[in-house]
Image (cartoon, rainbow, N blue to C red; front, side):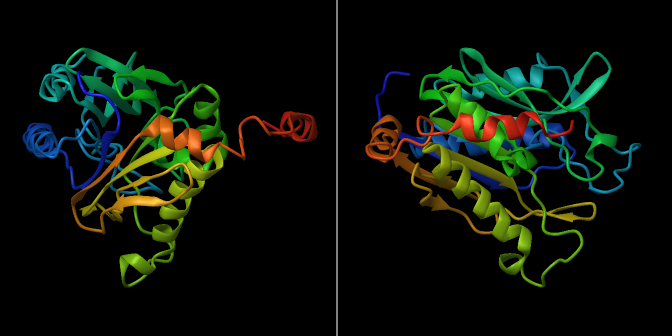
Length: 285
């Protein structure tokens, strides 16, 4: 990548279903639109290749998303589409007979980073195995970390990545409206409020940039929220979409803004491990 900061960061809200070839055509169009907009980092939703499960509580194990190996030609195609752009995409990964809800960060140079969703809500464990790590990695736009939807509910996930030097967190989601207490309008749904709250809190508490994508539309019994956004290191939403498809784009000098946010208060440095690390260690497994 020949340009220098500030970077243009973009999060996608969009619907992606079971047809992988159709999704690849759609992704190609999104990447071209993003390229015309000067985007340097593009974050597609969770399950952009093959779609998500249709029921959180009791997923139909006979109708799961198609799974791909991490070196699948479909992922390689996205890398070629990306070229100098950094692109994050979600897919179902097949490895040693196990299926994972995974995310990959790619460019024309190849794979930059990879993550398997660690935290599993409700019955998701019936459809996927769980990952076991959060690891930051270097990219042409800076050091990044990946999370997948429910991961961001847990402060430890984002904190682990920030402590590993991540300046940007890309969270790829297939985050639905409440399955137990759905509101008549998505903006009033309690999951809509929580989705925004977690995005802003994880950015602010770690003083990093959050790029948060999400699915839209309906898959089975699930209605996805959209609400893609870019959040600054002070927890301020710099750009966002609504419930429908779209692209949230923000231009930001990431390193400069993080340095500015940490001028007086440095959350990572001012932790008191002596006061609470023992309590964490005493928690039951």
